[in-house]
Image (cartoon, rainbow, N blue to C red):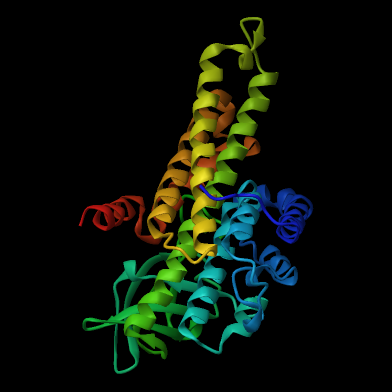
Length: 350
């Protein structure tokens, strides 16, 4: 296992994100979720801080810091808003794919001036004569994206293409969770696309984008899971039952310990995957395991937090129900947790 300590510069970046989240995101996230308001102003705040270039090389206008500080920063965001974290992930996926493909459309994406969403191979889009067709059922950020970076197939050939947001037909999705993440269904009806890469080059670029999603989503889930555990611990310490706080009762303690064990384990795996990627090693299997395990841990932690809160757990004021809804939504993105399990199995047992 590699050293998981952040450098001084990386620590500064993560502390900056924590401060931004505490001052700007935390006060508004509950209201935004309740009224299904997209966190676009907060997205722009991250752009102003230069956060969309963490994984992009300095030569292409980024910070060149890699995936580890991104994972640590997304934990801080996920503790308050999985919706905002997912918008960030979508932007970074697009930046990573374009950079890996050698595209020259980086500046606006890294600056956040061009809100973008990645439409992965799980949506099974096709491309012929430079035109993309197919349907993506749910894509975060898609409702307001100005462009889509699309993985499609031209027969047996993998293609990475760029599609203008206005060229596709989008329908907002009223989802269970991630309600502030601008989720939408996208219809591509032979829409014109700009080819970024084909064949092996496209496969490598798509793989890089998926790696960002797996590690980023895992980090977001870890932050959310820890927030649910902290909320449950606080409530259990204040709630008196049978003359003593719930927190001193063994059954409650065991629930919280089990949740913490799962979240901590997922965190170690996530950071390990990020470090492997930053060292240029194959991180795909580890990242897949981290992504699956972290989302599972998030859902379990939020579920147990709701139970510990009792009836209060189902009310928006206590926010643990939001962590649960967001976790269930994360389960279906990137192809879905079950499909990702199948992919991991095919990688390891083929």
